[in-house]
Image (cartoon, rainbow, N blue to C red):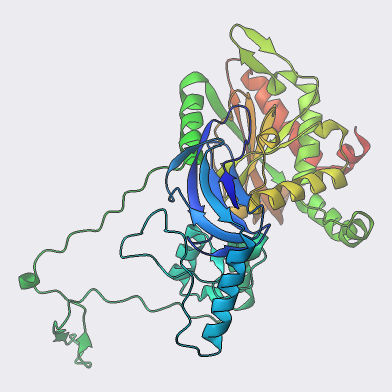
Length: 441
């Protein structure tokens, strides 16, 4: 019996997607729950798992655009066939050269250079194209990296953790550009030192053309590009800046970290302080939490805060709903759950819709200052940046404090400069005096 592998529904507004990657090859044996393929849409990425044990037959190759509900492969679950495969494998192991492997269903397509032999999941880890490329750049053997993703998949986080735990790794040597059989002339410097070998290409070797790789933009990247251009074209975007002394927040986190972890089972991060401060400021300045719709201004009596997260395949902004009702622990749990969903490609359309204000933290990548772009139709976005020790004047004395630059980009059609500056200053006051947001004053 054959079970069809269909592209699942991921939201009412999504009609098609890109079959980005097959995690198994044609003819591989799979088990129920194994991740088979990765689907990219213009909003989310989705992993499709096997619904039964059996032999995989691929009908649609990687890189093709497929409609929701389309059949992209099948799983052969015939019990007799499985017995034949197991029997043939046993004979081969016993050294019976006369044993013949039962015919497998013809492949749906043959890759360039012929079909590659199937490899069992235990022998070859599941690695996405981007993670494999990063591993090759660092000269890493992916077989030595412990996978934590679904179905034994190696994630970018696994690779980063491997690098952190093994800091003495030496990157693989980059091959030289010299042509085969080409002599390398040696030169002496003016100091009379030993000749220094150089990688040189004689003019007679001919001109070497620069390699160009052309790849189609993924649906998510196309969607990001469209939204950013839309924000530029259709809003009167302006940005105001300020800086925040993070010493009180850092001291509070150090003081309460262990007790918070023991009580709630999650660590106390910086983002929850900024979300709480943002909620307090949005209540005072409702225009920042409003949209322009036609010739109307739509105000919201709730705070759905979008938190920008840099995912492996593009930026996504999952929404923390009714942040005004949540405690610090509930906010931290929401963020942690979104990060886990993104790593496992389980983010849904409903996780991304309905935001009224966004926060982006470029500081985790080392950004000192930037101008965030509006996430339309929202009218405001807060940009956080790296915490850096800097000299500042406090009560007439120059002291070193952990400082963070913050930026508020806003739609000047609905928000005046005075409101924007005061809004950002209110966030600064709340973060520099965290007791205020804890006591809601």
